[in-house]
Image (cartoon, rainbow, N blue to C red; front, side, top):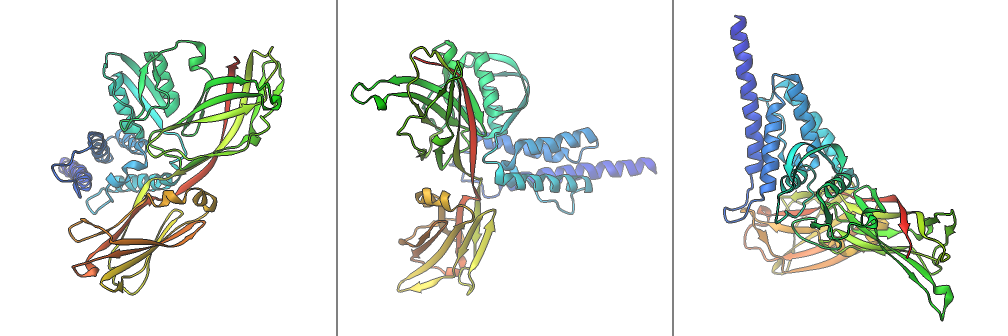
Length: 441
């Protein structure tokens, strides 16, 4: 009898594991692109790993179940759409772990944008294989190297992204290519300069990495008060992120020479805003000070701060039954989207919607144009986009935008859905930095 019960328990465990794996596979396959559309191999790797970890949540071994749960949490909020909701076939153990994982990842989804990702690896990898593993864990892509003959034993445990990247670069004799952009991610090259300065004065702040790029002393003979020491600082962020704007706070800048003398901020300096170009992952910040005495050989430390507005993960809101008489409202984090029912306007159908971002008046004021880069469209029953014949901005305030869209519809308007896709939140945060041991010209 005991043997029969054990066999039943084993069968049920295997059934649950198979069911969970099938749920993950189905959730990944639903809505897949057509055969002629190239599938992202990195996404396939993530989907396969999620399926394996979800199945392991129902393992007979406690250590294996805990390892699987940690593995899912480590992959982060990007896997939320791949995780299945528990069903009647889900065992009690798997249900608890799945619900706990879903809850934690949904909470992290809001603040994930400003926190650095971490890397955990333990094994022998070539650089390209290591970069692929890093991309799976962090969503930060690194352009593959043409020659991948450097193989080493790598071990990182929850190491922040930029710290791990710098450790990899130092060991492999590589460096980041300054101010280069590629859709394949960060670009690397063999070290051009092995000087001490090439790897000094580096600091990390959240998803950002700062490094002194150059120091220039400018002497104006006609206007001595315009003499300036220019410290150009290279600011790069994790490729998965894209700051909407940054503001360098000149009032917070402090520079101390080796002898303890404090450098004054250049008289004409003021806090400056930067709006990174779409697709870029780096900018150059100018730190300006009054010229020190010629005897000064180095700056011991520069301290400062900047504010960055970072979008959270993109979310999709779908609004159906648009011929209903009531306005539909959906909220997520600090984003609210309200869609009004169809209005007949001559030969066209008009759809009005409003987007509001709570607690972000200054942020929205600084880059209203960014809102219009968010994706919104009408979708028919076949899932295809329907082009608008006209659009008008009907309202624009500090943290709210209203739009009117006109469509020429042939089918019943109630069969269409309105889709709005945008970051579920925008997080504005102040970051402190400190750069040390900067040689003077």
